[in-house]
Every structure is written in C-alpha cells, then in structure tokens.
Image 1 (spheres, helix red, strand yellow):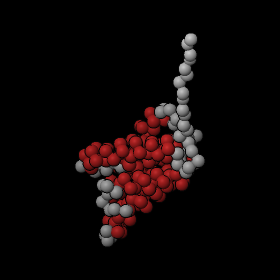
Image 2: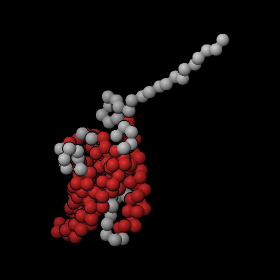
Image 3: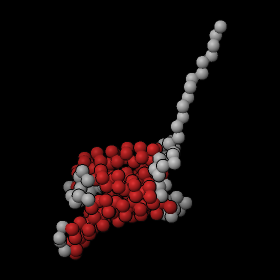
Image 4: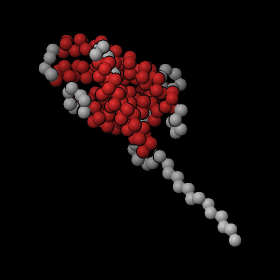
Length: 182
C-alpha cells in the first residue's frame, strides 16, 4: 500500500508589526557591508584625485528609496549607517548628526516623489550627499576650531562626492529594484 507524503512548507513574512521589517534591515546590512568595503578600497584610491565617494551614504540612500522608508525608519537607517562610519571617520560622532539630517531629507524627497511619479534616485542622492557633506564640512570646521570661511575650500570635494554618489545610486537603483520583493 503506497502512501503519499506531502512536503511541509513554512512561510514567513518579512513584514512585521515592528518599526523596521527584517527584509529592510537585511538590505541595509548588505549595502552597508558593500559600502564599507568600497569606502576602504575604491574610496581611498579615488581620494587621490579629490573625490571622496561615500558609499555608506549611497547604501542608506538606496535602502530608503527601495523601501520607501518613512522619517522614523530613515532615522534608524541613518543611526546604523553613522555607527558603521565611525570606523573610518575623521571626526568621531559628527556623522550621527550629518547622516540623520541627510537620511531624513532622502525620505522626504522619496515621499515627495521628486522627479516625477517616483523619486529620482540621481537627484535625491545628489541632494542627500550634498547636505551630508556640507554639514560635515561646516560642523567639522567649527568643531576643529578653524575659521568657518575655511569650509569653503572643501566645497569642490563635497560637490564631486555628491555627483559621484548620485551616479552610483542611479546606476544601482534599477538592478536592485528588480530584486524580488523590491
């Protein structure tokens, strides 16, 4: 006598009643890991030519766009990202403020549908990186005791970084958007 056996399947939803779902945190963790490695390798190499890409900013910007994070979720992504940046920053602690403001801006741009029906990753990432970099340059200058006017010298680096990050985020957005669940 033959018996049929059915395979037992278990499914779990990535969404939960919590503030941030596991799928979003996994996405952020993967992008932060890649961003950290790229900052330590390619970022240092490009620093020679005056562009200091911030792949960590690109990582949380992509996470915010792909998950359409609200302000509170974006703040959580910023704090986690700033914690990772502490391993390589020139002014410890400052990134908690700069990335928080930038991530909130990114979330607001996504919610405002900047660039048409959906957030334009190029524009949103450019503005986000520009704000983060400008805040870091100005606040860092003040914290280091230098004249505020000396922050202007950092403007080309901030602008170049914003352009570079915008291109990276735009280039990665569409392939990541095609990943199931995004």
